[in-house]
Image (cartoon, rainbow, N blue to C red; front, side, top):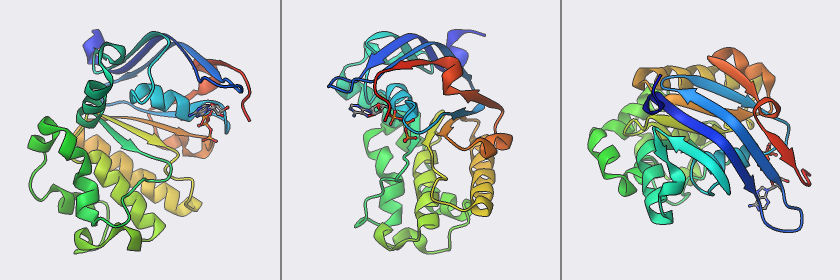
Length: 231
Ligand SMILES: Nc1ncnc2c1ncn2[C@@H]1O[C@H](COP(=O)(O)OP(=O)(O)OP(=O)(O)O)[C@@H](O)[C@H]1O
């Protein structure tokens, strides 16, 4: 398999947060193939969000290489990295990060503002279609995001990650606020939508029970060494 066939590849990566309680993470090798879904398990404070920040180019590795779709993120300057992320990665944050005063439709379309190629791929009614596919009620696109239930916010965050079909979806504990039954139906919906676009999914969680819905389950401790204060 050629490097460009990888959705994601980390090689000999080292990263350390600065500051007194400096936490360091090193990842000799980690890869995700195109179309593959991977659940990355780790305890709270083990470095999962740090790893996702490296993968999204929010922070850059001190050493080694993080490549998304064959592009080495450290070869891009900050602005170019932000645009690259908007074009190629759909991110679902732990707290969803919706704009509370903006409509559902504007929230979903937000990444398209910074990503012309992704914008071109998105059909004019894609926000509404994604909402329908994710089981949100008709007409919700005009509702202000601050008025939504937690479960609805979560679906809107997924629609925002999926719009314009980015090749990699990255999710940080998106089910932590849900009960077990809702978690399962949410994950079923997420997997189905992602399979429909052929994207790869990397989700991090501390919850082993979610594993059945993924092609592969990886423990952070199997791919990374960490040091420093972790609490
Ligand atoms: N912006 C930051 N600046 C400095 N240190 C940080 C920063 N973000 C995280 N850390 C440190 O990195 C370590 C790992 O945190 P991280 O959030 O990556 O773990 P996690 O596995 O995602 O935890 P959780 O499951 O609780 O979200 C912690 O010691 C934390 O204090």
